[in-house]
Length: 251
Image 1 (cartoon, rainbow, N blue to C red):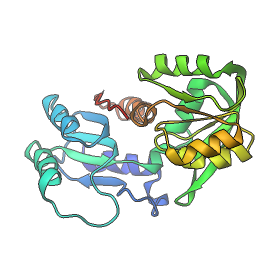
Image 2 (cartoon, helix red, strand yellow):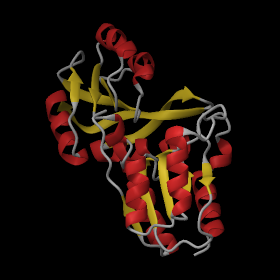
Image 3 (cartoon, rainbow, N blue to C red):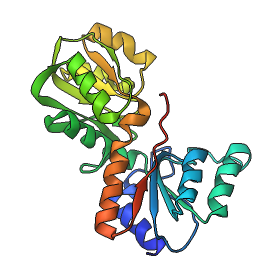
Image 4 (cartoon, rainbow, N blue to C red):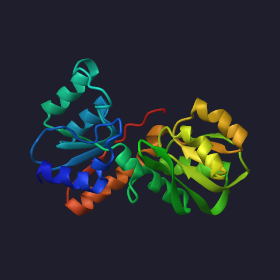
């Protein structure tokens, strides 16, 4: 399949043009082979992901965290090695940051909401012109401990909890990655807990004072779910072989 065909499909599906304020350069970041026989997916465009994509002979690597953020940077050091390895193996790099967090069907947050069984999730948390989080009532209340255990099993990663809220969670807010900055808004919405990735120092006292539990399932782990859903969509709709590359971090 032609690279241009896949890029157009991804741009249209993820609506990348609607996110001009995102610090990530969303879309095609590095152009490799004009033809794509296999697509690899990974959370980060790190050297390990790139090398493993080359090992399985992928022609395209689709990531959540790409190489280009904000201001222009020189192509030296680590950046030069990453781009050089991509070009050496003719691997194209495509990034989808906020477009994947926010997507209503395959996004990180909707996938997490389905995982914990939130009924009719609603959007909250305005960031870079888009509401990036979801909140709503669980199909049945659960304890902080049982929710953490369920997430640990489903995501395959450690879960850190700060149980400042009610013993049983009925209303939950979700923001994948580093979403602790939305703690105060989650409290105003009446959430019993906020599920995010990283523990955030700035979220600690608002959580404690607002009586909201903070559940941290890992930045990496909470942002695998959208990519896996996108990988399956590309495989089914484009009839293209796909492979998810696991490169877990401790954060």
